[in-house]
Length: 535
Image 1: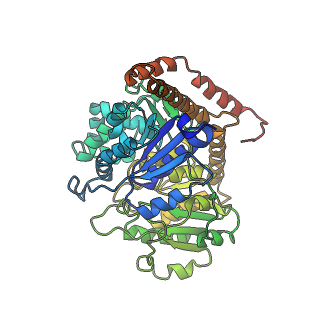
Image 2: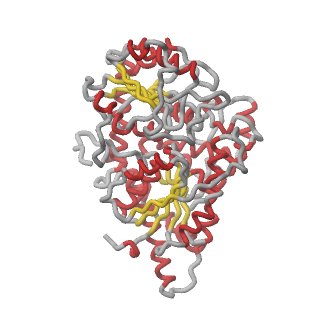
Image 3: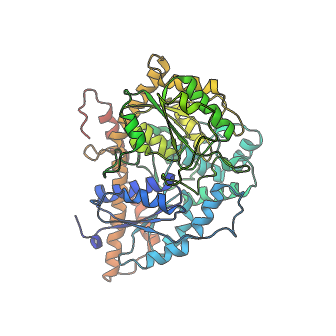
């Protein structure tokens, strides 16, 4: 392994929220351990305790990975309390650019590339100024990426989608039903609509786009993104599927025994449904009551992570900026049905605020996951072979739920989960039983399909077999190495270095790359029967 100053250096920027921090951290770890890239992760966080807890989980054995929290920024004068979460996040990221500039300028080894998630694209001019390659990292699905990019330039199509509530026809992709559309597409002219349109445009200016998915999972959509004719030349940069990037489970470092995990140790295999709406989601009081009754009526074992209902005028994403890692314990007795805890104590466990989700989903006792369909949670479920009850709340989660239920068929979903609708206890009971009861044919088929996806994800990331996602990230690493060599040559007096000329060199080189062949090869290997599983 080379010394830090002799290898390419990538700067990764994570926006607030576990849904962004987790995949950025896992991407950084893979760049270091598999591709010998020096990585610095800059974190714009709103909850220090949660961030510190996650960052401490990074093994000490992974050297050449640095984590730098950026100072908090006050954007209260730039946004309203009622503004959409997208608007708030974009404001925080754009007002963090001066802090990022200062931090990068102070580095003894300047980065050769800047990798940002969807809310960090406002930093691209800074990357250009400092001569860094710039990569956009879509931490969710390729379908979301295609929708965002297409919607940013096809305003007439989006207007019809919103005005007539007709499906949005994204070229080469499954149509997006209005009921599943992005929050940002609900009203044309809203601030969040314009904010999101700008993000879609900025994404296409990247030198490369990384996506937390894999070829075998979203091959058709990835092909559409690469088809310049179909996408009307909107996506010029190469698209690299590098997933599934998820937290390791069980934890790499020894932790204190957790009550939920200890309880699971006493339960039969695949007998427990895990219920959680993520670190930033919650349900209205009336819906919490219906969910409690539905779990009780199902007769199934459960672990339920409960967060207090939002206060009046808040929405279901109200807890996003006050994430908890167990420190914000609160009583749940005031909003669960009377007698619920005593009636279900022999087969259920209610956990306030937080539980170690990655460890729980990896536990042999867990046979189902009732989830908000955040992409991190979805990938953690799939990579552990756990079928889902999809219950989306906000952001792109309804798009994720549609992918899981309609295309991949690894989840079931309430008939009506639109904003303001109530999912009744009787339907919740049926949904849980459809996934959990072993005798149900539908449940068997779902378990088989999710097991297949789990296996394909393992092969995609395989270093030994040069799986599709490993190969894609290896190509990115080669580009970073080329840029590093150019920077070294410039520092040694090798002539004037022009970052725009360098990008032209990359674009010409990509015409002759054999990356699609490696994707084909990994798919061929995956399809062979009787193969030995040796990841």
